[in-house]
Length: 300
Image (cartoon, rainbow, N blue to C red):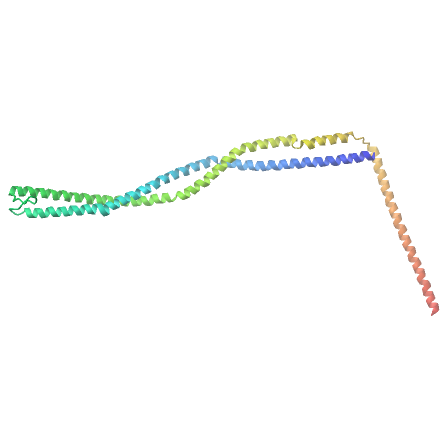
């Protein structure tokens, strides 16, 4: 009977250890499941942001394209401004100066031809009145043509001045737009990184969902601890196979209690004997001291 109880105790101890290992494995899987669920929620949020991030990337790309075009326009404005400055400061003043000299020369020739007997400015031939009037008329036409050209140049100057002022205003506006390029590039890098992360989250979400499904199946079926489960069945079968009589077990328990009481009584008896021995020794010591005191008194 004692051997049976010892074997039962051993089997129950091992069963408890196996059940504890199974609980540990289940707890580990449940922790992994919670971690995956948290990751799933995080990735689902990122996946939901995909359309917004894609629109932001497209918008910023469009803005960067416009900035690139504005950068080219800025270079064109600089080129046009340089060309206008050359015309206003060099070409037109030189042309007007040349025309003024030519007009002055024509005027001097016309003055010379105004008096009778004048000579031809080219061949030095004395001109008749008719020839002189014809040459003067031609000179007058040349002067008028040059004066008209001067007026055209002045009008062109005014147009160029207005055009240059317009270009200056446009240059400031375009320059402000181009100045946003660095900020747009930084925004593009940030949004593009978020978009790449959201894309990876979407791609990983499929595997996470599959893993969660596998974990749920293992937790439900108990296949996460197949070896322990098999051993647990073996231990349960072994425990059921042990011969166990409840009445005999209770009788043994009563015997153990009786023996324990007897052991307590024996211990108490030994304690009383020790106390009695000590008391006897104390009495003998008292008698000895009284005898010595009587002898001392007699000697005195």
